[in-house]
Amino acid sequence: MHVIAAAAWVDGVLVPPDGAVVSAFDHGLTVGDGVFETLRVSGGVPFALRRHLDRLGASASTLGLALPERQVLEGAVAEVVAASGLSEARLRVTVTGGPAPLGSGRGTRGPTVVVAAAALEPFPAVAEVAVVPWPRNERSAVSGAKTTSYAENVVALAHARRLGAGEAIFANTRGELCEGTGSNVVVGVDGGLVTPPLSSGCLAGVTRALVLACADVAEATLPVGALADADEAFLTSTTREIQPISTVDGHALSVAPGPLTRAAMDAFAALVTSDPDP
Image (cartoon, rainbow, N blue to C red; front, side):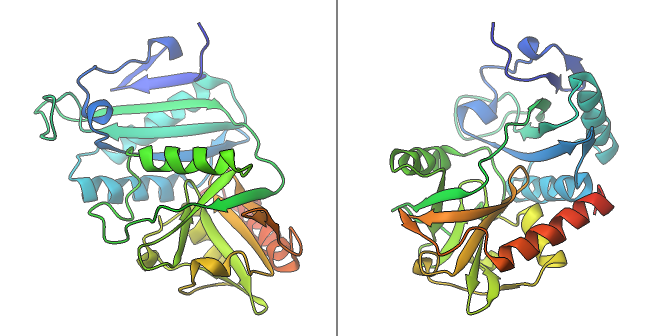
């Protein structure tokens, strides 16, 4: 049997990866009722754990999900990192509505909690992106929450890959630049770096927030077409960190990485080196 994960923890128990199972009636499986966080483990240490668990709590609050105590989640993360034996890894914390009837209503048994780690697959040095024809709904009931309802992202990413791109970019319903399927977007405009505000409907990315703190990036509303017209641009995410964008819908940007992107990459690298939990 092919094992995807290197280590897993399910509802308080460290289990063999191929034994990491949940109920067929779990609300996360049947209706996508769940929230999650993905962390990057570097040198055996999860980066920005506090920020990720804070955001997990915010997402859970949006869905009305109960979380275990913070120390329980921190302990589970430590157990999984140690059991994985991986120095560099992708670690995911998932909390679902737990076993429930076959419908939208939740059951009474409480949440399912899973922490899992797997080897971290590197991203290409630059990203080719495609703008997809489906908008993000910035007025959605779960806008800004990192939920397990990722079918929209799956469809969008598959569309982008059919076009030869590695990431899909969404506008929102107002035609404004929003985000990628698993990334935030930063655009070089008139000699400065700009990223869409959270009011665009984009996720409050942990790496996005750290880049705003350590690099010269402003928040401003942009039309989606600003990305293709940019002097330079990049994606941010936990596993990508900062990834320069080389093409948009097959159109090459003038440089990748550009000077502003390089400066942001250097600032972020210095932050990561100086503090594992900024």
